[in-house]
Length: 162
Image (cartoon, rainbow, N blue to C red):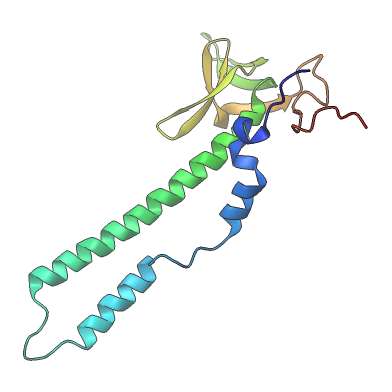
């Protein structure tokens, strides 16, 4: 009996737990709007005899900026993870792209995707060692001889005898 392959290991971005977790809103963290609201409230209610010191205010603004940048980075990382997950479906598919030849003419090239790479935030398909930016891909098709079930995996249930 063959060992089963879990789709959680192969496609971790598509597991039902990850989809559910991504869709759920988390309210247990302080966002940038709440942080700014606290800062404004603090400024409104400060003691006029002992106003907020410049150093303290600058430190709080730096914290606010840091919170905002961390949230932006988290969003970008999430998008990158989603893009890599989507691009991984191209592995084994035939793609076409346009390139200029030595004479300056556009030629259409094609090949089977071996792997997906990410360099400086740009995704590339590797075809016979050549890296093609996914922005330049003009066509995606099944590789000849590819079955409709080529991307399916054993659910882990296996064959059961009654």
